[in-house]
Amino acid sequence: MPELTISPEKVAFVIEKAREFDVKEEASDPDSGSNAADDDMIDVLGDNGQDPVVRELSSFIRALNEDEQIDLVALMWLGRGDGTIDEWEDLRARAVDARGEYRNPRSETVRYLLGEPMLGDFLADGLDAFGVEWDEEHTTPDSSSPSERDEDESTKR
Image (cartoon, rainbow, N blue to C red; front, side, top):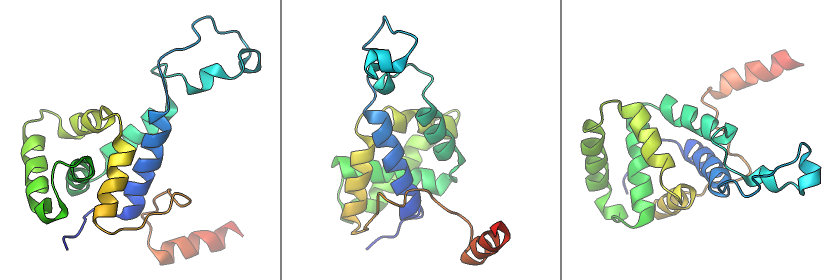
């Protein structure tokens, strides 16, 4: 079984945020009032281009290292059915080749991934192909080591 260079926790975070983004829709209430309650909260799911979820997800993906970004693209392709787990190395090689075509690989990788309408579902299916269980309840990735987390917890008290 191949190994991922990106942690399942990081992928789970992207899945959760991508699903939050996927439920957004084009402006459905162009004559919005000043109070969301007056509008029955219609605008909450509207995509107005100023979405903090998009900014958070974009920043997160952009901050991943090159191997993690490559795995994320290949994992999305795996979940989309563009290959099987047995073809993982080929999927990764294709992702490396595609990345090599970009002028600004970090930004264009983000744009490519966020342009995929079912990104969260495809990534979840990709993790499933790896036999990786991910928990929607714990989707905030933590890159610190256990000892650093313990120190942080003790200083909060």
